[in-house]
Amino acid sequence: MIRKTVSNVQEALKGVEDGMTLMLGGFGLCGIPENAITELVRLGIKDLCCISNNAGVDDFGLGLLLQQRQVQKMISSYVGENDEFERQMLSGELAVELTPQGTLAEKCRAAQAGFPAFYTPAGYGTEVAEGKETREFNGKMYVLEEAFKADYSFVKAWKGDEAGNLIFKGTARNFNPCMCGAAKITVAEVEELVPAGALDPNEIHVPGIFIQRIFQGVDYEKRIEQRTVRKRA
Image 1 (tube, helix red, strand yellow):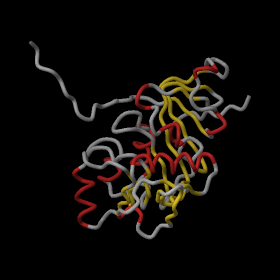
Image 2 (spheres, one colour):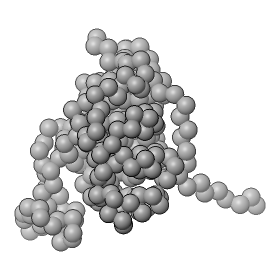
Image 3 (cartoon, one colour):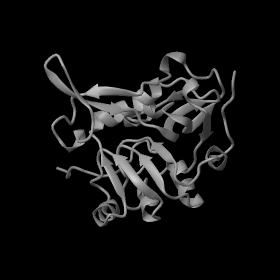
């Protein structure tokens, strides 16, 4: 059995350099690779192109990279919770490529599966389709979207084993699985790391063949993006 464990986040991020394209999993603030983001901030790596469903908030998640001006381009679906993101985008400091959420997920999945491109009806007739090939299928128009090309993919899972097999919990099983294997190197951080063979094969969401490095993360804050409570009766 191939062991893919590394001892810590520092070892997991070896090889990450300025100007690279990175995928970062998560949905809102749920299931984001907190340890990897913190290490990217510490390393001061800059001119990054980050692919993620959203851009975190001002002082958490990808917002930490934006605060330090480490991101040159952001490819996302939803960015409405980050004031610093808005400021950098409107001032022209940050290049932004907004992508329909389903298209963003499929561009990850296509890269994972080795498909160079695919057709989707999402965005046809809008700015999303400008400059892209379009084609009609069965009387409906579609836009050709190319798969992502990323250097590293950083994902966060609930549990994993030494062979890289992963189990996600709840909403973290949104963009994380389709980013596994969608880059040259996929790094998984997990809350619990167990020996190979300890996981029930029927419960594994992503097989270890998609993972190159795995480590057990620490000090997860798991912040709630918008806390909504009901008044007591």
